[in-house]
Length: 305
Length: 328
Image (cartoon, rainbow over the protein chains, first blue to last red):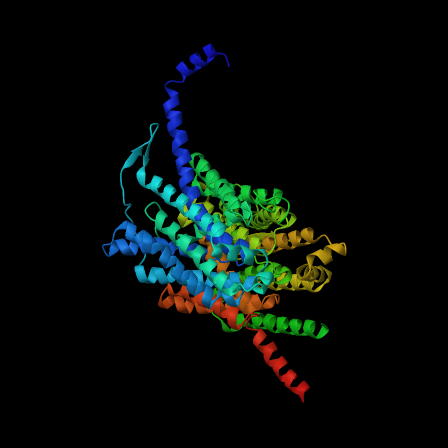
């Protein structure tokens, strides 16, 4: 483009440009917030659903339990950060009990796993409602103000959320690729019989991996608590979206998880600006179904499963 | 196989006889209670026709029930549309079938089976309920639509008016009987046999020349159409439609009705629906929030104690005695 034309265009746009940049940066950061949460929730699901072939419909409740942990700690006078530390522990405890009591007995019966985990999900929801009462629970963010990002002012807490989520994901990647436990997990995933043959306790590895996924989902719940409406029934929305992340992204790689989160989270946040949230969700569902039809093995994966 | 068919028909005949003599002993209120339970029984049978025959669990079947209900409500509440009741029922069936056809096409021909299918249908149910709540200009939002007139139409010169308890009971009971009988004859015939083959081993069934995705799709659409019919009947009898009708809780409950009544028996789910709703009304009268808690426990108990439903107790006892005799 010739320089002269550019300068004229820029002069005309001098009023519009800051507004447009404000819009773009805000949308981008909103999308990043959602993508971060989806990645954390989807991680546990990618482990249980994608790799262990366990359809855990109680996964959304790990998020709920994490959010309630933050609420509970705050309500007895603790700080948000203490609550955020309690959130993954609460998720891990519930996940560990679920694995020991129910899921490990049903590895060979997929439909039974669906029914049993859904039952557990209902029990947890009603249990929380009976314990903490009806209605939304208030959770206050640790920092209130906004941060000036040159183009726009953005809530500081959301930036912290994105940072913590990214750091957690990097930590998980290091754990899986660098530690001996990560090696065990990768071995069990590739071939369970052979892993058993070389002396890996696959039951124990499954249990730890499942608990770990639950803890990460609990952390996601704690992180999202100040932004979301904290209700016993809040888990189901994260459950549905996280399943889409895993289905669209394909199982078996962190890259797929990121691709799926960007697809679902990005599309949802962009559409949320234009249309009502439920219509946006319906469109994301349809897009996910079409994506699965076109790329049955996930956006990120090649031809082989 | 022949003996099992005879047993099924025997049970069906006993149920039909009970349904015929019931109005002689029941008052108007009891009739309406059983009538509404029968509609949910029809809904349960529609899920069983798909889940029981293909082994693929649909976790959002209430979406079709709700779609049928809303279409029926919108058609009959619009005075400009003639023959409201008949067109409403036709529209409800067609609407549910259409949505099922679109979703089913992408899923079945995309090779989606098992857990993946369950998840996508679960999300479908969530979205349907949200759409019913947020699209308030059409659906009435949270409170839904009220004042839906009872079914009324002319058929071959006779005027049918279902505003009274007894006619509506007879109408619903005969529809349930006819549909259950029809579904049973489909699923015991060649169609059902091929579906069983696909469930056992889809690759082999395809190698024998059966178009497995198409068979699954048609079965799914038929199942959704009947769910839509049940939804349409329900809103006319209840006089109102609300977002709950397409919600996750109803999707969950229908799975319990089928699982308790016995998956794959078609008649069992109808009986399961009637029995469990009876229990639900009793329990909810003590404490409304107790019901979902118990429902959750029922799920876990079914999986670990009664994987084949309540009717399987009889079969288990029988095989226990038979096994004992053979051992001697």
